[in-house]
Length: 570
Image (cartoon, rainbow, N blue to C red):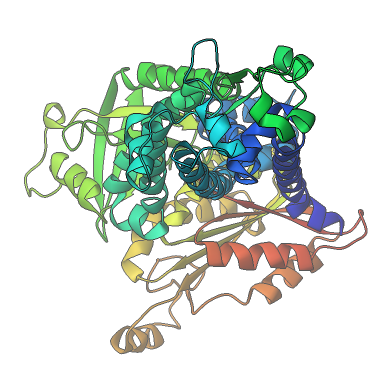
């Protein structure tokens, strides 16, 4: 149970608090508009749809306040790096920023749907009340404001029947226009954020996501028209709606029931979102300032399997293991920024990324760097690069454990290149102060060529550990998950050789996928009473598997073995 709390508890706690606040706000504001006499006459016109529109509006304000905070990467990196205000558990929660961002987005979509549907009924009934036959309370209320010294409760002042009246509201009133615009913007943002679009058409995702600027502008001014109106406090003191609604034909003639006066609700959304909007503006200014700093590409290395390595230098650039940066190449696109994990170590005098060529932008970068040409590319011909970052990730906590499991799938091995390089440098100089005592490294890959660029690093680290009589420090297992018949035959023929036929390492490549339950049980048996960090950069399916194994193989006793699961998110 203790490890379940450590792996899931804080995030579950945060989700419960967040959901609880949404429920509280919905119920509270529903009662605010459904019970008090202030909105008695508004309810006569609109019925329950009034409260059903205003309650989700309050939840929208709350969630729109939250939606920008998880993507303030500089703020999160600052908090993550501040040990004074961030414990390990809090830092692990910050690593789930994008998950929370997506949850809040779906909650915004839900409340937008409820708010929109309720207002469709409100508009229909408001328009209908203006053309209703005289003699009803709704007709009398809708007629208020037509004479001098009267204030209106029905925001629709024309006498146009539905459906033309409803369309008139949607495309001539400020609330209608902004409602249509921000709803369309939200639909485009959410539909273009699906995994398929992000992976196959990243440019579509990137550009449509910036419709959030239009969304927030529309959101702030949406309530400026004050179409939701209630009876003023002064009017309530003279005119009790619960009594006077029975004698509406005598309003203004009877001193006990003067004509009621109404006023619109002042816009409140700006009060909710102004703080996060200011923080996000500062975030973008910091990103812009950093992106203007000069970056020099010192080396471009072409690796097999359409992977290139960019080694760069930038004045004042400082990094930690496993961090990532955003990269823009104006020669390919002046607006697009793409995230890449840093594969260099903090001890090196440059920083590097590995880019696998899988789309239009990476293909453009490949060509801009001259990798499509046979001749040597001179440095002055290399494209200009803008860099924003670095930003913190879960991998920064690797050196906080004595024992760790590092699991990379495909190109997801890149953050662990930084970790393993840093370990190599520490051992080359002085490893006596290194808390980390044991690394279990797993790399799962479909193609043999993908191993080649990483093999040199493992060979260097393997040799370094043997020289220092500490070969047990690193246990690595490389799994080939895809091969054909001819490759299988070749593997069998060379299986007895001293070094692996694929990687050139002493540790032989394994075929298939790991039995994670056996792996966890074996490691737990070797390290009783330890807190073991499990770090993954890979797909969601594998993340679910490792998270479940981390929980099931941890002991309830606080003094027993505990696996702490961490996943890269960027």
